[in-house]
Length: 128
Length: 314
Image (cartoon, rainbow over all chains, first blue to last red; front, top):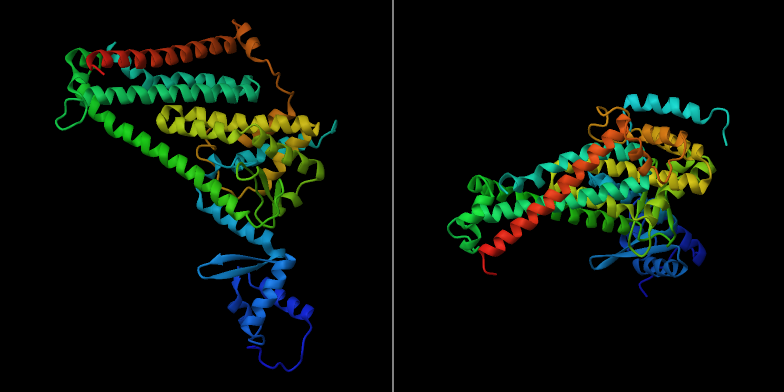
């Protein structure tokens, strides 16, 4: 209905790939309007929404409510997004050690020397 | 009773030698449980006695809601320097309560935030995050316990070492190590003299998970190598305070322990049997100190309670 006439009719698959690529390009969750802008205003807003919804059904993207609208994230980037969020959590907490038992803690210079010696031993003969 | 009321406040000092001995001579599982238990009991006694000193010392301050009977001369006799001590106990007790509530709240907040960060990922027991910073965590709670590890760390480990890493983190989760850590953290806030116990438990919990991982992977050397490599690649993380002063830090000690023989599960009696060695003597002294401190803490708390009950018709 609000679709403007396009110079060339593109297939559904092509449009989905375009939108997904635009979403991946955005490093953070993006609104539908933002996706439209990234595509150079080539597609109508409603078209973008339709394609995003179709991608959501396929599990290729996910969305999160942000105020009155949604922000969208490419599914392949979910892990990257989680990594960024997790880093933010870890950086914000000065004494996170108390909550999350970390595999290792930091090393001083003397510790590092000692550790390298010990590792030399661990690689030595009788290795299992 | 007199000065005994204040004993629970300073007696946690006697737990220091036992913390060191347990760290070195006990199986890490036993050490973690024992030290956490000692810390919890001592923190509780210390807080109770602080509360009683405050009640008796300040019951006659104008405008306080406590019954005057609580600070009868007979009761006040039990607390020397009652006014000074009582007044000093108010901010001390408030500080303890505020610090503990804050610690609990932050504990919940970090866990919630970390869960939320992983919300979009598939519901698997291991979450691998693409990140250049190498780290690995055991994240308890939510719908399921999860091991969080970054690609940067996994890339640097061989497959056997990765298995060791996962086994280590899973051991944290199955043994609910976060509860031990939270307990000693609160204890250290309730009485700063208990801080060495917190450090000791943080170390023995890691050792416990190391030993579990070694058992599962079937090689102590592989676990040692995994820890060593992980520590060397994540050098950039801040060094915990005082680690440089206290001899070798926790990581080299863990690696050295893994390169040595496996700890016996029942090392406790053998320490006590060797009465005539210095270790045996120290063990006995430390055990006696801890027992006395726990008993006198409990004793003075109970006595104070009865004195107050007698003074105030409840």
